[in-house]
Image (cartoon, rainbow, N blue to C red):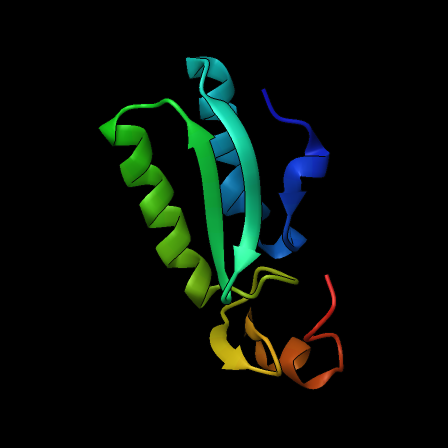
Amino acid sequence: MIHDYFVECGEGWKPLYQPIIERCKAEGVTVLQVKEKFGGLRFYVIGGDDDLYAAISEAESKSKTICEQCGAPGELRKTGWWKTLCDQHAGDGRANSR
């Protein structure tokens, strides 16, 4: 089971993580945490099969090309922290906020 407070990343990645969370709920897989780490999306789950882990890996890879803040195309940037951001969010001072 997961509650929204276990999701610790920006709304821009919601299209990546929400389908996986729903799949985990349907398959009885426990989601421990969904977060940003080193500029990419990370899932921590208990259970699941190889297909689920492949979907998680794909979402984690895609996150490094999508702005965590808004979902626009982005790139991995070092702004004091590693963040994946679009040009607008990389330059607007919100690079270190969640």
